[in-house]
Image (cartoon, rainbow, N blue to C red; front, side):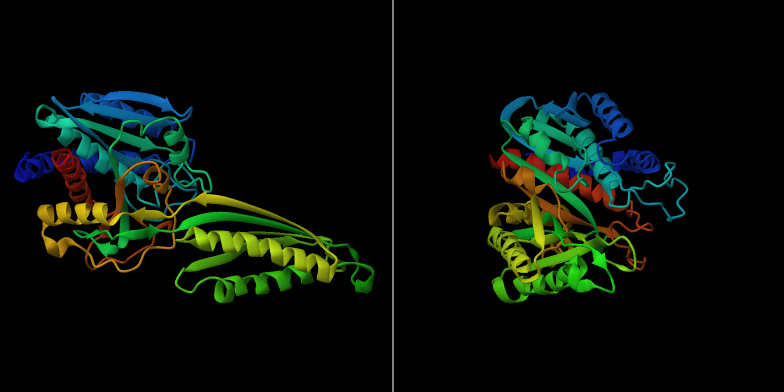
Length: 396
């Protein structure tokens, strides 16, 4: 068994390296499927640790590193996402984004630095490892409804992998805490596009046309009945239409309206109900108004769901590393989505939240132009990731 103090000492030794890596990555963010510089940096750094690296995985910017221990054993994977967002940074950091209109506003810079820290620690422990570690550097997590995880899984990155672990920095949890629970952690995210076609006419003669805007307004309001009256109230769901576009001029009855939105759920039964009932409502709308409607419902990321066994395992290792007080009392999942679900559908493993806001600091949400990871969380994340690998190997 690898001594926990040994892992702590190595993490402490490489903490400054993690900070430097995070700042380099933060300064040059790249959005989904454009992570060329980022992927090259991750590959080069992993190679410098003695990790075997494969680039261009799944035909894009995926990077997969493999570290083989001295003794045979299970294969454990760790994952970090690499992409940034199309947001103009307003943090005022000295190492703020040098790429106009792009920013690491979701903490993926921290995720990558943590993975590199864990990789360096584990490479130093290679002779004591009984198994293999796979480091997955994933592009396009933000590219819902089809993120980078799906392509990597289809490319076989989990072939032979016994368990995979991932994390997300979590600004509503204080630095020094870990959030994990059994069951759903993050929601499924579906993309909805609806076209309602009517018939244009002069605004003064609406009876000569079919008003697509009036029909769309009725539909948007009625659609919320699916959530409040047709889905089991024990299955939480959110249906939001965030974009509506229609009409050409103020004095013309609109001949077409396009709606775009999302559905967030934790249960496939709720997803099925929303998709089916949206179609039923549109058919009823067409009968009532004389419109011709189209529903394009695309299943995106599935819900991130931890098994009780894996959630308990992560909590147990975290408690051994940092004490029971470090475990946040997570009662509710988040309605935001994460394509780590793609890995958990194909492999055993778990996903957890890492507290990332210093006590007393303003809590900026993810995807906010002021959000910045508290760098004190980096060694905590690296120690837990490295420890999960070591304990998982011992457990097997």
